[in-house]
Length: 170
Image (cartoon, rainbow, N blue to C red):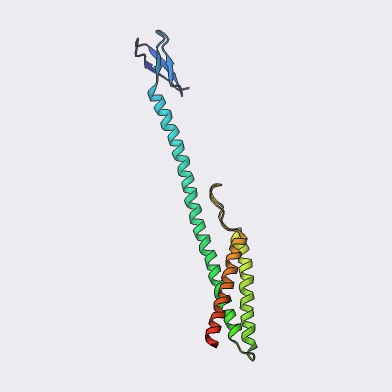
């Protein structure tokens, strides 16, 4: 135990303070003594622990945000690649004439490749999505959300291809 003595403010006798005690009683005159420096020391120690815990949480949150940004960049790359594949596939299929079956086959292959790629990569992307630091942070990387967004992009590119076809044939 850490025992510290201070002088009694009333009679001058030594009053002992044990570790983590804030008050003591003089053994001679019975005067109650407050150990202010002990209280301040305990408060500072408690604050240091809280600051240390807060720093750990902030570092973990910063690391999570960096991992999430890298994950979102890869996910967006998936959307771009599948969107371009389906756009080119629909253009090949729509703009080809009846005698050019090769272009239709290429177009269908690109469209199916985009769908298959979206499905498999969505599964992989969702599996390596970083986990949130605390329960208050919403989880990203839901398979339905990632696949659904990608599928909407595929449908949008098909719609744009149909508009381009309508413009060229008009």
